[in-house]
Image 1 (cartoon, one colour):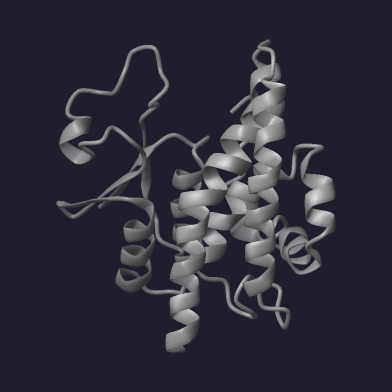
Image 2: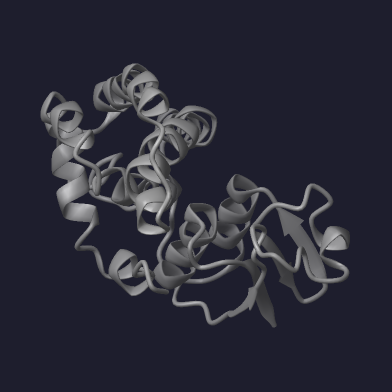
Length: 213
């Protein structure tokens, strides 16, 4: 039995779901809303002591942290490999995962997407200063990824989808909804080509979540 704890709106939960779709592995999504008014469900901190999502339970084995979960899924289940074969290419994949977690997520999602799209959707006023302050770091993130995105294939590292695509897709799908993304992505043609392709990829479409849920 494979249980994935989290909320469908989370980019990190979606990254894991994309990986599971690529593997063709059945799973149960157990709802955990870290922003819910009722708080975390009883016992969840036993699975994830930091109170974040996702967490994974597989036949009694518990795991948290998205990169660790992606690696475990890739190595454990049959189906399409989600890592490149070359040593340098695997190192590049890990590098991209680190950029996405440590720089892209906070800037592209929280500073720009949440302020420009999510808050107005809930009737809140966006913080224009926060958005403006996020544009410089957003350009840095996109330029950094542009420099290491493979130009010979439709995925970040070439012809093969990897764990890096699994996490980059949900982050950039949100960023792409904002007007602020257009001039930034206009300066990164390889990254833009990847984004146009990955948004139409079957596993990404299968895990898409509309604003209404």
